[in-house]
Length: 393
Image (cartoon, rainbow, N blue to C red; front, side, top):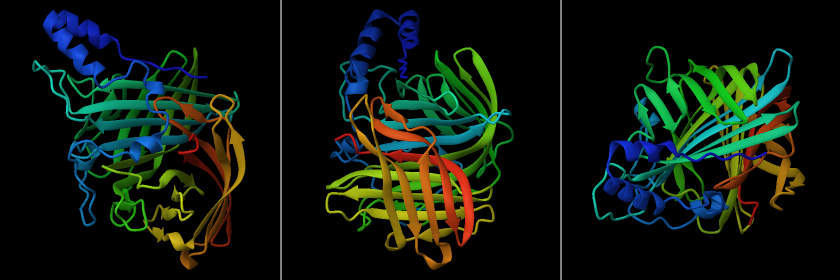
């Protein structure tokens, strides 16, 4: 099931509060950047992120010290960034749900306007919302767009907030430099989410102190940190039915000016809760030479974290699913293996629903998964999220 929302109230506001001349300027600037049918404008996230940037953007370099809460906010000198929230939830009746709410910011290419306007902006914003209803055997998703002008979309560090129109994550409670305490809310006609999320732990810096390489030579990279264990409680709504849920969320924060190098075709990313105290982030960036770049990070509540180099990792698809809607063929079951002595594991990953394909401005697979296997000789059983890109080309 697919629903897509597009902001329209801004036009009424503009007509009421300004004159016809400003309306013309706003329409011209908006249409220069927002296609008539955005869902068909860019079908592949990997195609966009491997394209040559237009303009001078900052480069991700090793050695940067990430600052909190400052780095919760946007970095306009970089080409793109995102705030990623996923979670596995359960009702008192033990019905399972999964959710994704992601905010994307893209720096606009240079664009000249004849008349200055408050609608001028250097950023375009997009948000994706998805809900996996396991017992109901349904997957719902929606998107929203806005310009980063007159308060329609944006981010701030203190108090932390990121939003696109009325979808938002907003800090609540006492301010905290390193922790996250926020309300997550997004609403569509068919479904909605409304949660409180809380982490009292420090953010986890991915890669080398937040410098996350995406290629063997390290030329392609991002700044990347995570809050992998956010206590979550709130509600999900399906049509007119509201369900109370609890569970665990995961926040990923990433920014860069290039994600894929020439010859790289997409990535496979996993954010997994192996048990109540241990999380695993693992991804690979595939290339045409059959030499994927892989990395993993085993994390724990005691901050006894272990980075695992590509040479120790094996990632093997074990089952595929073909979308009837788009024809894309996705590897939806995986075996993940680490032979690193301090962090040996063999993990089986399987989707909670087969069809968790998102076909919006970008087409990709993102959904809730079950996890089983062993870690350091001990059995594990958990849940998590999986993202697969570049399989629609």
